[in-house]
Length: 466
Image 1 (cartoon, rainbow, N blue to C red):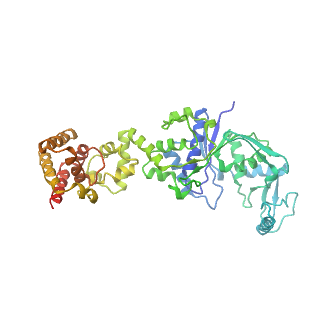
Image 2 (spheres, rainbow, N blue to C red):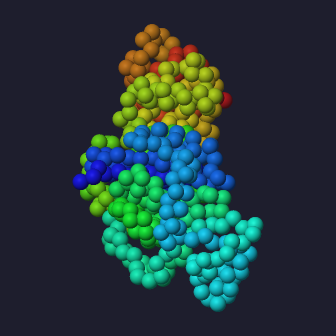
Image 3 (cartoon, helix red, strand yellow):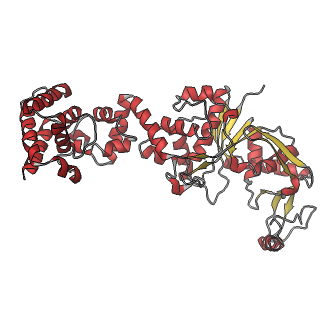
């Protein structure tokens, strides 16, 4: 049996989005599961729309996700001579022909067929030969069989049959010598020995056309597997308006790559009721036969939950580096505050993303704190002034500025004043952090430092008395 080879073949006419990543992941997993190879091919023959910026974004996105290719990246623009060679063979063998129809002629045909209630397909007027037209660079069309049908066994959807009568004579080579998508992928998949073509189900209509070209060239057919589309929260096809355009925006928004991959693998695939998968488990359990036929819905809340699970388990030093990088982007002077890895470790269970984590800990790196006014009106009442003052006085004499010792001062203050812990905890947290959420209060105070803590407690006590 030949080695399994899958491929991910993005077009650099835009960024690498989550739908593309999910396809790439399925291709990568199947190759790894079967001991095969994963090929990255950049389909950059659309010279008007392809950009180097998009190429870079694709490569950066794949690298961030750790979806490393065994072969590639291979660029179609480096294979133009090969496409022309195969085009010449198709023409010589009677499977393709030059078409000299002008844009005006083709537009007139489309309008006439549409007006007659017919599908606006090409009339095949050049199929049996036509004299060259001066000033017209001919395109090359494939001679689609006029009768019969194409049947293929889709690894996800089962058997699919399409009548050739529903297909037209598609263009395989443009007048400028650039191959079209449906033609180039056939040549590429054959030359690169791709055994399994795993792609979105928006390509199902292309598959019969490609199979006809495979057959005309006497090329072996790969196995096709068309995975379901991803829908937005509103049930519409996932698009720019549903969130991040580029997968790199998820990186910049503070998601971990392993969390995003875990989320995407569950969009259209399942293994029992399991939700959390390590990369090794994804490889071990993945199978095309378990891919669903129905579309999946992208749910940002579920992604946030998953990301939080991975933040909880992330390596402490790695988390600190991610926190520090985001804090610098946010304008924090991390030299004027606690160690980033200490902060990230304390907040890892209280944030869904690194960005959330940084936003909620800005108070640790500033001499000033902005109080939540709603919370202040509730917790900074006159009776809180003496509590905060007593707590601050006890903390001022503390030499061991560590959470356990701070917790001891909190307990002794509550006991000496004869109050419940909430009467100290709520106003104290608000005083030092500006809000009511965060890490444990003793840990928060340790991270904030002695001078800032005492200054904030004094300021809040003064406000409570006012």
